[in-house]
Image 1 (cartoon, rainbow, N blue to C red):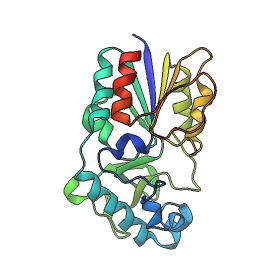
Image 2: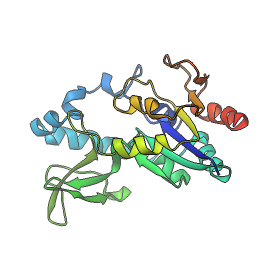
Image 3: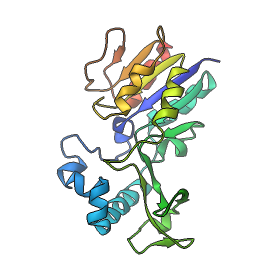
Image 4: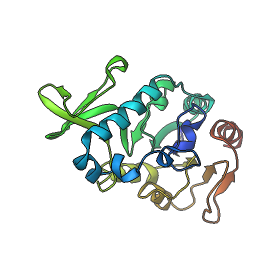
Length: 224
C-alpha cells in the first residue's frame, strides 16, 4: 500500500467554520498577534493568552469535521495516510483519521509549565483555563507552539515526508516556516499536489488544484 503524506493548513478547517489567522477578517485583525501567540506575550500577560485560547476552544467544540476531513479518512481504504497538520484543532481526529502529527500543538490540550512532558487533554465542559488553573499539582499553559519557540515535531515531520510515495499540501499559504519547508524534503520523483482556492507560487512539477479543501480532495481522489 502506497504512503500518502498530507500536509494541512488553516484552509483545511475553514469549511468547518474555524476562523483563519491571516485571511481578511481573520483572528489577527482582532488580536495583537505577538501578545496572544508568542512566548514573550505569555510572559507579559498570561491571563490574556489563556483567555484567547479558551475562546478558541469554545469555538472548536461547536465545530464539526467537514467533507474534506471525512474524505481524507476515506482515502485510508486505498493508502497508508499520514497527516501532518499546522492546525491546532482536533477535527482530523474527530473525523477518524488514524495518523495525525500536530506541528503547532493541540488546542484541547494543556501542559505543565514546569514539565513539558506532562500534557493533559481538557474535557469540553472544562475547556476554560486561567493562570490559576492547576492540574495534578501543576500550573498549566496552552499546549501550543508559540512564536519564539522551537517546533519539536518538525524533525519527525520531515522523516514522514521523506517516506512519502505521494505528497499533498492542502489549504496553506506556504508562508509559515518551518512548515512551508516540508515541501523541500519530498524525495525526488515523488508526485506532489497542492490544493488551495488561492494557491501560492510553487516549484515546477507540482500539480495545483485550485479549489477548497473538500472539493480539491474529491478531485485528488479521482487523480491518484
